Length: 208
Picture (cartoon, rainbow, N blue to C red):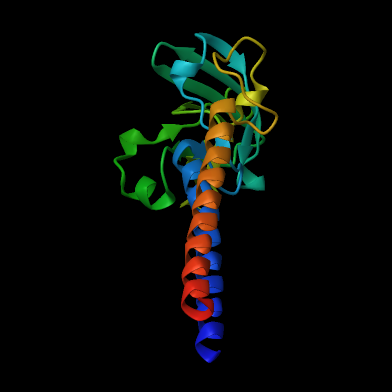
């Protein structure tokens, strides 16, 4: 009887581990194809190939209240996509497409200087994808140092007709949603099968 209880405990532990693997597998699948982080979560990254050529207004999120983007104009032409972003102050002299450490180590010619002709800081940056957090280090004039900043262009903010793909209300494609659901079903079936097999052997050993 003691061995019987131990086997039941072992089965329970295995099922818990498999359930944990299910959650991890789904999250890993989402992070492989989607944007994830502090700004956005579980959205499908939208690349230039999925966007019609043109210039569009876009909403941009930022990880810092001191680097708030008040306006953005996104331009997509062929495989190139860039944007002119406007921040709410002139506190930053440069930005860099990377971390603060990478910016400090980079050649100054790679720094993107602010255009302050409008009275606000404007920067022209490359945009690899929408619904994706992009590192954008910013150089503070006052502090004389680089700061880590992340920004994300929201695909849902583009006007109708700009996207070649259809996203749901959560910023994901139907295919990504279906694939995530199928992974859950397949792993759940595996859990049921493993649990059934283990239960069969227990009954056969102790009750036959």
